[in-house]
Every structure is written in structure tokens, then in C-alpha cells.
Image 1 (cartoon, rainbow, N blue to C red):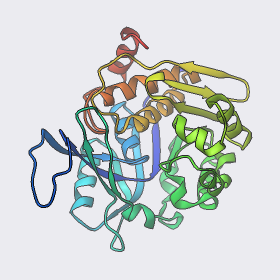
Image 2 (tube, one colour; image 1 turned 180 degrees about the vertical axis):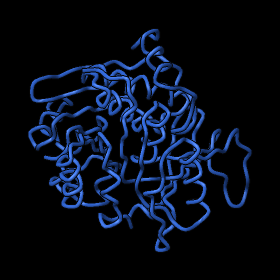
Image 3 (cartoon, rainbow, N blue to C red; image 1 turned 30 degrees about the horizontal axis):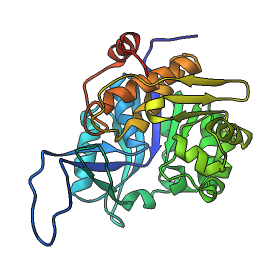
Length: 314
């Protein structure tokens, strides 16, 4: 049954402050400088970025994670607060700096990155306020690899026991050892939200459908994998659904995976079908891809639905 009421969704895990530098053609040698087009910062991460987009789409979002006691942490929390995200569950630690990335964006769209794990590596299950899950309909766990499989599994199992649906998105590149590391979380995961390279890397499968099916066999209820320009693939025990991406001019793909996760999760929370939810995820990712950073663009659920209804796909 489809509903239009705004759900309350919890996002827990990785929070990052991204700084994009646009117009990088090369790294200056020695102590030389270079003028660039734009430098801007934005909230990001598999929990933080997803929280921002969920809030833009109209969900009430409670986010939990860790940031440092530093100016980067101040900036990240202010950015999340401006987006309407409830940050009262984000702890501040003096043992590590706020997680941050610097992303030089080349004219052709390539975007290598420098990254500091920082406070995300200090966040533990003991930092989670489980009472903040009361009244939520869904828990999205971003970066279970930092908690470890046993702790992530415990948190997801608790969420399901009190009636929440669950989703998981990983930061780590596809590696069979990483899948083994979080194996205890998979049976408590309703929706796994990787990209295509992660699916193939985790499973060693020769094609995306086989890889997704292997993840379902490992305990996941549904795999909704992003495929860049090719859209998304949704796989359950019963179904395989291909959902196309929208035909847009791409500026920067940073945060598109988090935006897809937000759209997909919200779609399911609103009672939309798997295919409809993946289409909402692709349409939401398209909003972010047309600007710089996870917080790019100005949109709400109605405008994204309108975009999906009128914009051609590949």
C-alpha cells in the first residue's frame, strides 16, 4: 500500500566532509600554485550523504555517527543541521579528526580523492543510541565494515526486532574478504545497496545478476545495485528487475550512490514497489549528478517524481 505521509528514517554510520576542487588539470610541482574554477565543501558519507538527500525528499531523518572535536566537525554538523537532519545522535570524539575527503575534479569528470578515515574508525556500537530508533520505520546503516559484522548484525537485528526495515551500503571496494568481514550482518539486511563493481568484487561472479543472486543466497533480502549510466539492477529470490538511468548532463557523480540509496529507501518506506523505488533512486541520483557534491541541486519528492515522469532514459 502506497502512503504519502513523511516517514522517520534513521541513518547510522559514516559521516564525511567532502571538499571538491573543480578545474584540476594537474598537480602543481614543487610549491607552485594553480587557479581553479570552484572549491566547495559538502556533507557526505554512506550515512551522512544519504541523510541529506532523505531529508530533501521529505523524510524526518535521525542520523548517528562520530565526528571530531575540530572545525571540520563543526562545519559538517552545521551543514547537516541546515538540511534539517537531526544530528543529536552524532557523538564527538577527541581521539580522531573528523573524516574528510579532498576530491580534485578534472575537466573530463575524473575525480581521484584523498581521504582520512578519522572519527568513522572510532565509532562503535556503544555509541549508538538505540532509543532513537523508536518511532522510525527504517534503519539505513552506511559503512558496516567500520563496526564489523558481529556489531552490525546485532544493530540490524535489534532494528528488525522492533519493527524497522533495514538497508546497508558499504564504502569499501569489492573484496571477498570484506564480504566475509560483514557476513553476520547480511541475514538482517532487507536491502543491500552496492554498486556493480562491489557486487562483482565481493562475489567473484562473472556477471552482475549472478553476483547479486550470490548475495541473496548469503542472506540479503534484496540487492539493488547501481550501474552508473546503465541505471540499477534489483534482484530478489523471485525477481530480476532492470531500471534505466535518466538522460542528463553529468557534472559530478560524487554522492550519486548515496542519493540512489535515499530514493530507494524512501520509496520502499512509502510503500512503492521495488521497481518504482529503484526508479525513484535513479531519478534522485540524477539530481545530484547535475551539480557538485551530495548536496547539489534543489529538489523535493514532488519535483523528483515530476522529473522521472518527463525525462527520457538511456
